Image 1 (cartoon, rainbow, N blue to C red):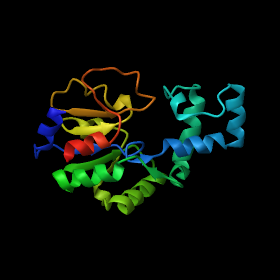
Image 2 (cartoon, rainbow, N blue to C red):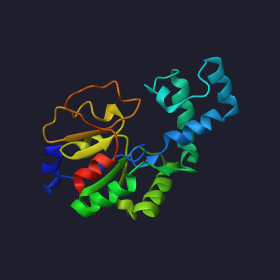
Image 3 (cartoon, rainbow, N blue to C red):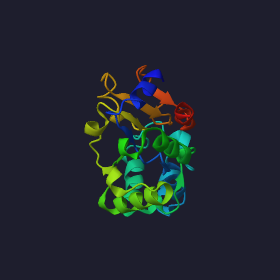
Amino acid sequence: MNRIQDFLENENKKFCIDVDDIIINTTEYWMYLLNNDIEFIEVLKENDKYPIKVEDIKTWDYMGHLLGDNVYKYHLNGTIYDEYTLMPYAKEFINSLVNKIGLDRILFVTASNGKNEDIKESILEKEFNIPSEKIIHTSDKYKYYKNNIFIDDAFHNFKDLIDCVETIPIILNSPWNEKYKETKLNRIYSLKEICDLLA
């Protein structure tokens, strides 16, 4: 955590933040949607997976392509954000970070599609007063994360950056990333840990 403090004090470093399941809690709602999707309920029951629970998702290959395909449709049509909640301590985290380093050094980097770009932007503006120019919609996060501090929950966004000495990777613990034990990862279990560091 000392290196994180050093990076925070370096005005040339940005703090990049994933949005889904870092700031906006999307998993609980899409799980609710899946468990109430008449067509998918039958698939879950056939595979002895009903009801599906967050702790079941140890990998996104869970149930092969079936899970990912069904979750993706909620992303594509935007319904995954219909009844969103924020992740625990998200408000405190963003407010503390803005107070500590200023909005100029913060970027929200999120994989989106045309349908949900506007939805994410409106949520971040409503909840945190974040202007759209601070939000980067891309699946190629590497070029934004490299040489900066970043927080994400998807390990594939980390694997090419773990050994980059000018990068501080922070992974928010989730069932789907627990199996990755790389010691150079800064694993946290709650955004409160960052809030405490920023205090």
